Amino acid sequence: MEKKNIDWANLGFGYIKTDYRYVSNFKEGAWDAGVITEDDKVVLSECAGVLQYAQTCFEGLKAYTTEDGKIVCFRPDLNADRMVDSAKRLEMPVFPKERFIDAVVQVVKANAAFVPPYGSGATLYIRPYMFGSNPVIGVKPADEYQFRILTTPVGPYFKGGAKPITIKVSDFDRAAPHGTGHIKAGLNYAMSLHAIVTAHEEGFAENMYLDAATRTKVEETGGANFIFVTKDNKVVTPKSDSILPSITRRSLIYVAKEYLGLEVEEREVFFDEVKDFAECGLCGTAAVVSPVGKIVDHGKEICFPAGMEKMGPTTQKLYDTLTGIQMGRIEAPEGWIKVIE
Ligand SMILES: *Cc1c(COP(=O)(O)O)cnc(C)c1O
Image (cartoon, rainbow, N blue to C red; front, side, top):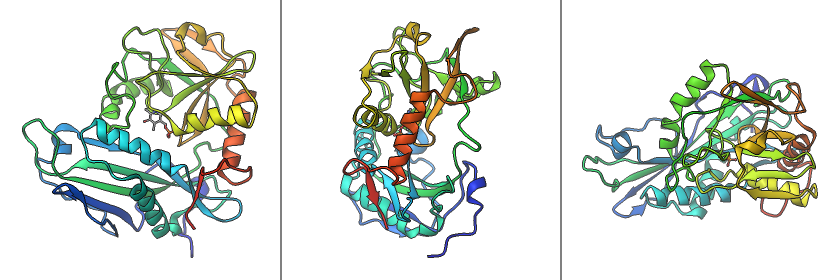
């Protein structure tokens, strides 16, 4: 199959339309068979549930080419499970796990010409999403839904090496206790836009959100979980019911324990202890790990020892091992790599 003529290494993170997408509709209590289509337009009633009450959730994963030339994606079963949880919490019908994985395979196969070659650093970003599609004006869940998967090629997250970022402790909250912080709902992002735009205006790359109830514990950023490394080389990651269970973070924790033999603590992390950590990183599908060099809390700076030029040594090992597993250079735990073709 001939690849599209794209300058993979210089791609950014913007939407580029690919040839095919997957669509399935839920009507009268059942999902239809689903199709791969070239039609990138969604036509909806002006009163569609998603437009009135934001009944929508999504997922994000990547397809890429491994060292031996296979097109694969990373742990799509966990994205399927998480979308089940998101749908249930938003009173949406569940798109079955096996069908989710099959739809990912179909849409990536159809767009194989857009899957970047090994070594380019680029990937095909896969965005499954679901929304209430029929008219809803009284507040209630929609009766009809659309599940879609779009794909778009994205460039290497770090061009010219992973430079540590500076983040701020936000005065806004991301998620309420017993709210929707643990699911991938569009609404969590809509209300975080003001906070991230404000942070960017002030010169920060990201927000560190604290727990809304006590504002003493570390939660996450708008779209990535935290991992910390202690001075005696333990990996620590915040545990909270209101953070989104990152697949990257869960994979890194496994890698820390099983590949690197590190001690791992998944527990509440108080903001007061952050100054004592040796390393800090943000984890999510897009970057795998973004190193944090500095955290600013209302003018008070916490600077991590690795500085602003490179990742801390343990973060680097975690990053190298997980990306090695993803790219097929290091043997993966069973079931982590889904071969598409
Ligand atoms: C998607 C997301 C993450 C990262 O999850 P991955 O599965 O690792 O991509 C972290 N936090 C939030 C709020 C997210 O929406």
